[in-house]
Image (cartoon, each protein chain N blue to C red):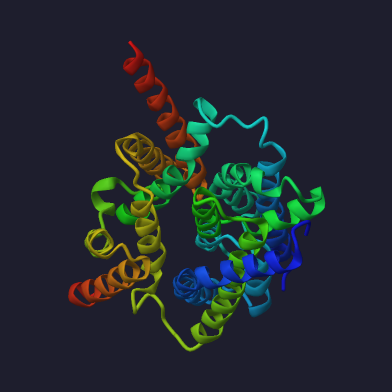
Length: 238
Length: 110
């Protein structure tokens, strides 16, 4: 790092310390993902590889939803992953000021840690005049350990649950998605993309087999939201 | 581990990292407002809404909306919403939903 070593390491540990409460909630969510992964037929090694390399919770839940060993819809899972994670494009773009003093390889390597929680905490530090790549890495390393460890734990514990449908655990997906969705509510401009996305998904699901409704609903709903925003702005100007 | 699982996981990892890196590389050219920025901003919400709707209403090819309506899941979706709005806690909302589905299924005998 180009900063003095002491400053970078204190920034790293500040990130770790501040992230601790978030890591606990990530872990509780990770255990659930691990249990469900086991029910969908993922092995311990697959869980570790996916959590360690993809390292993006929402998209991993979406992937599990379509996970059918022996006939994996590879293209549709990868496409859904890209769409769910597209938001990270905006996140790493806003972190640009942090990496101005770094070499390009180091800056690109640090972007691996960009995810909702780490990004939100680093942005909040930036707004207060702090924040650094070392801080982002501190939150990211703890987040990674918490996610990889808890999903592995869930996978191991899950082996002892015989019939997940009996305990309602299959509903954990839908419940998590509903809660994640509600947490994203920022105001009335969210109404159009959500409703159009849900309707497009219902229509697609009723005619097309498989999980394509996720991609169709996501694209149609978000485009409708952007069109509604544009229309609203024009009306405000006029 | 099967080859299909390895390919899928590596593919997921590659697209996700490419998106993370592309944001930084395109930072100067990426519009911070306007149609494209609004579009990307709305993607996660639309995707989640698209995921949730068919699961709550149990829609699938060959089933009409009327006979697909699933009371246990629909009631539980309401419980998740109430718990989440009350607590703002993801885990509590999920646990409430799972508990509600479990109780509803016992009560309905399904």
